[in-house]
View (tube, rainbow, N blue to C red):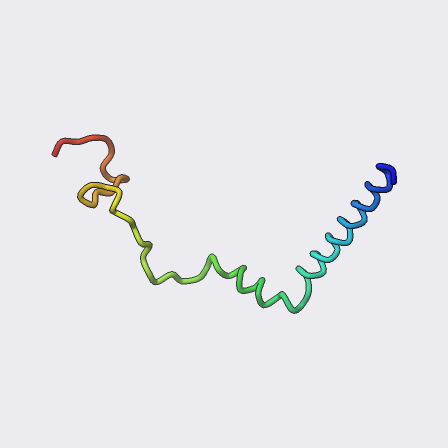
Amino acid sequence: MDSGTVSGIVTGILIVTFIGITVWAYSKRRKPDFDEAANLPFADDDEQPNRDTSASPNGADSRKHKGDRNT
């Protein structure tokens, strides 16, 4: 086999893979999952983010206390 034949086979495999992924993505069976994923940014988060204060001395917030201060 020469390089042209190998290139043609690889191109054919990639085209079939692309068509398979496209059919999978647009199938009606996947629509509810994609609709749910599309609404994730609008989901209501009731719990507060967990902030790790173990890295800062005395639980200081590094965003509020900048630089070295002698207090």
